[in-house]
Length: 284
Image (cartoon, rainbow, N blue to C red; front, top):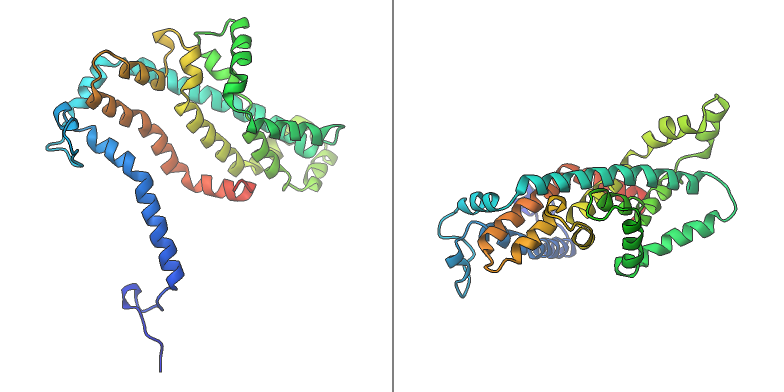
């Protein structure tokens, strides 16, 4: 007698109960994580009166795009968007340059103290920003970078997480490949640029995406360094906007949706590279 079939999946055998429970739990967890984002997006189309209703309603009575128009009119969005884009792009490029060179040295060069240096770099991952906040600010102030975009870009250039990811990936590149390039007469810069970097594309994509997300969402450091309205990033400007005497929550929600949209778009376009890079670098 043939085993029973589950016709809902085209005649294939019914999946195990454990697998069904696992997928059900994952879907429920995903919905739980996405619930605040969905509530923010729906509330950005509500009026102030609807937002003050108790109990609150999930859907707006009528979708009001006026919130976005009014917020963009009161909000110097173009300047803040330009600052956020400049800081994010420049800091990401600088991060990739610094981290790849440091990771290459730690992965492929033998020198005294290499392991100790790597452990020190790895240990800095556990040091919170608040601990080094004052020394870093003092250095930036001595360099005259306070209240400038360079003060937001340069301190975030070297990240221990990026060095760790790239080093772990570069360890998988055979040393014989680099030795063969040296025997063929290639110099160290050429080997680094023409051999090592092309092989590290998945890891570079992961570090780039992480850097974009971190720099775009960074708030505490820009809040301290950017002291003039012309150097505000979107996150700082949004916080200043929310601190006004009369808080227009409908406009704040509209601007919050606009602010998080670029990161969501980047993630949706690069999610395959994120998963592939994390799997290959062992960062789990």
